[in-house]
Image (cartoon, rainbow, N blue to C red):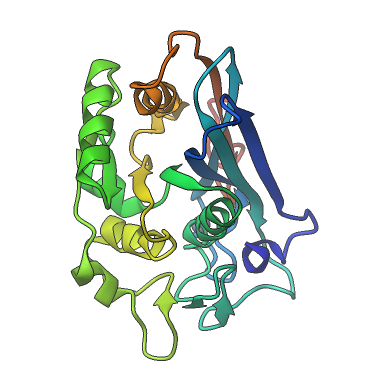
Amino acid sequence: MHAVGRASDKEPVFVNIAYRGNPDSQDWTAYVGKGVCFDTGGLNIKPAGSHDCAFCLSIRCQGKGQNQLDCTIGLVENFINENNYRPSDIITSRKGLTVEIGNTDAEGRLVLADCMNWVQENFNVKVLIELSTLTGAMITCLGSDATGLFSNDEGLVHDLKAVGEKIHERSWHLPVNKYHKDIITPKYCDLTNHSGKAEAGASQAAAFLKEFVEPGVKWAHLDIAGTSMVNNEATGWGSRLLSSMLVKLASGRKSMEKIILNIMAWTWHGHGHGHGHGHGHKHH
Ligand SMILES: [Zn+2]
């Protein structure tokens, strides 16, 4: 996360929102997300006319729940100055896994990996659900029809799909396995953030994140690249799913009906250099 943010004069911000619904419980749920508040692409600069968007979730819990919840979000600007991290650098992640930078614009997974590592190190996380607008490949794959769902646990897949169907936030289970891990394993270190191999890009990203899941943790990655924005409008996809899942995860314990979650989703939508307004778009 530091490597991604170090070319900006605005320091990265690490946010953790904690909810202690049951201080006696040793079972933690973690929700992880990111906001790349401005993304130039870094030295692998985005083409003129492209734009960047950041999706961020803030979650507020009220009432008597039975959950121990932490929402961990990495906020960072991927900017350009003389201090950039470079393509082909090998950086060390917070967990200690070494990562070759195949592309400085594949920064989201680097931020998420450190956030995932932090929350699992600090709390007894049993379930970790992470949402992010992660890959263009996801948009190619499913469009805005459904969110891509990657996981290491069949039960969690079942619950996310079942709950999602009910509240109209549908996800589609996609593979993440050794095939994808092999693609992102480079010659000289543990992982690459961008293999350059143009296949199964969403699964490659999921395989990267999977390496930061600790043993015994049930994990799901939801790639909302296609569903977070429809016709340039933010949908807030995942807000209802995460709040409903919290109830689902705590069911079986008592007095669940008091859980109320207010979830706000906001999207900031900026424009890259050379894009549109005032340059040939005379209709404004
Ligand atoms: Zn990027």
